[in-house]
Length: 255
Image: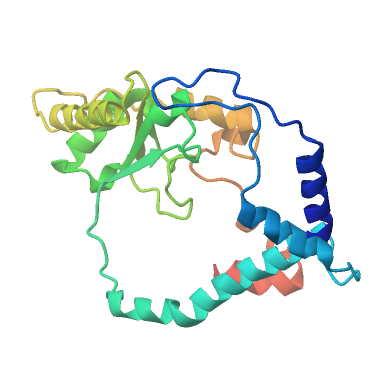
């Protein structure tokens, strides 16, 4: 392949017309329409053309395959010789402190998108600094549809968590910067906690509004909409024991 390239290069050089500068030399700078080979390059090509081509070179596809293999071998050498050196930077795992807020963000691998500035925070009611059961009841009422008895599906919390007093989810995408949206959501959560801890707000007689929970359950149609079983989805325990297959009966009875 190298000999073929050399022949083509020499043929192009021989057939190319020798043009004079199309612009006059001004201030020591000259521009030409075509450049010629240096004597060293011409001697190299002449030496390559003097040797007969014996079909002992690989095609272009073969050179690409060899290049890919070189790259793979390069990274394999890094894994073999350089990765063990990272042991010096090993640190013991330290369990992070319990944080009441879970922050969720969206990223499109560096691409610009309006939703990348959005920030969502989720907090369990039990993890907030609330003073007594009355404060827990007040924050459920003040949060409105932002409070749900179960963890939000897109809140970054496992569905296996205990429900207890529910979760509050606050999202904001009104500001151009992610930090501004996060600050607004965090300040809103702080105001909710402050008003819930205020004993002057007497909301004992106000029931918790669950209309948004029932509406979402009816729309999903996953079993919670039947007979208003929002807090207790139908499971295998709802069936009579004789209906359960024998291979699963013991697990159902033990649970």
